[in-house]
Length: 162
Image 1 (cartoon, rainbow, N blue to C red):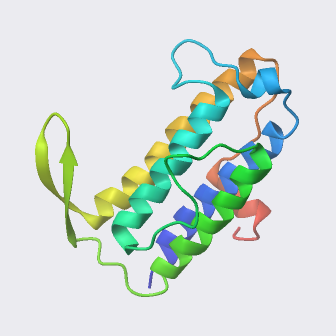
Image 2: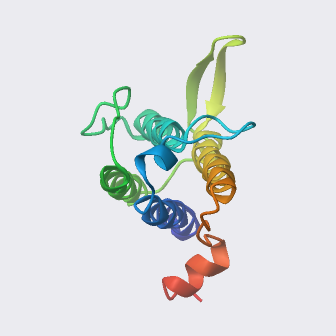
């Protein structure tokens, strides 16, 4: 019933794990490197998008993460643990029918409150992660570190979904 959403979110976690596998090889200076046009350092970008994903998921599920999303200060291996938790929480959410039209009130600082369907929040969680993974890949490339392949076909092949 939620099979397509499960693949979408499993891919999201899989891609983040692949990226963090490369990040475990980085020196502290590289982990804290940035380039113009990206969110911040690799560490800051990873912390930002994992914290944001936990926030989107908290809004949809009502379930709090086991870690403080505002104070996330971790190594790549610690971030991988957070991804595993997020993955498990997404799967719990999708173990029942997902009501993509359920309305949530979301407050934007510049626009006030808006009614937003659950499907848009879920799409934002995945889009946001993709955007920031790409920014980290840009930093890695500038550091002459090859980022991993994390395309959907790579996921399908690697997980026997193709």
